[in-house]
Image (cartoon, rainbow, N blue to C red; front, side, top):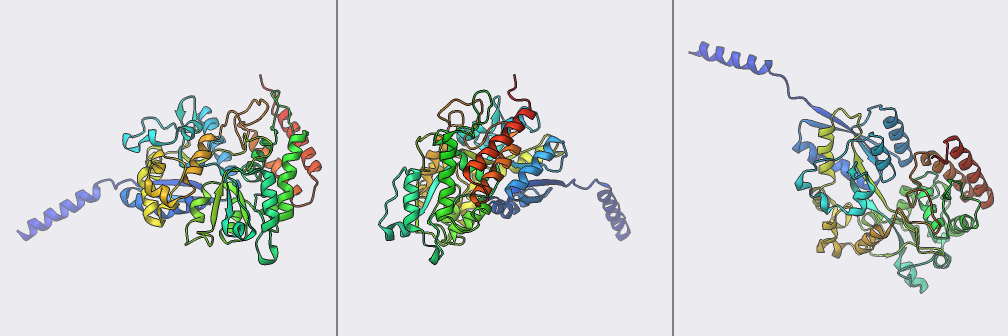
Length: 439
């Protein structure tokens, strides 16, 4: 009997050994080194526990580097990544070129209709959705209420850039480590250009006229850039020309900035006592404008997409549905508090009374997202889509080159006139080489 039992056990073991092992799918995810994405990486253990056959490989990069690598990979069909973190600039253009896998037949329990329509539309081309938003943002004015109270100042709900200049002068106290204002100076089409362009829009500027001729030689651009540069020269921190989003976030969170005009998504981080020293001292206002309250705040979303070159598109979509779902938002709330959840993507977030109570910036965030118009952001007509960017492929290189010129102006290496002249010249040359105006 024992021999028979041993024989049976041996046969069973041999049979099991002969079965093919469960295939393990490896997903390589390229993302930006922003705080929300760092949290996503930490919480992805939840996804792996629920999907033991899928393993995640993370590539976390600085914003400019990420954009460069993803653009090169997808244009050459390199296939290095299964999931790409992209935005409203890339999604429609890459979707049009069939470089991305469309999100057709989204599962009902994902509740796609809950995703804000302005964000969905921005990630679509010709009615097809090519990425799902991890978070969405516009801009707001962050300020230190304690410093304003001490100086006897009142921030209006809708400040102008002239207001901002006056406030910065009164709260600027570098001897005690507090600078009047922080703004991005770091070159990049998504760094300093993404912040300077809405300022220029509000003074009546535009990148191109209807014949695709660059417009940097106009008074509107000179006025807008001068306002931005002068603020940083008079009241900004040292080395402002090298400070991008993450650097300014760290400065403001550590109490070194009296004001900061930047992404609404920052509010959650700044209200997290584990990461911010200014909790309870914050005030919020609409983004400033110059002469015109139009085009003065952008719309952006960091979103997750599947390149057509991915060898595991179904598994990639499975992860994206998890990372952009209502359940993920709840997971973040449980992990670090409801005030820190990814904002700007779902109406249900803003219908949640607990979130509204915990996040005094919530309604302002939603308002700026919903009022940012990507097809009507300038005083004069333009042939392009975008507020903080120009929706053409060539803009990545042109915007970064112009950003380098503007950083040189902020650093004091060039005058405003010299920086704008260089921007005009290099943009004219690049557009001519690219064959604009195109029929």
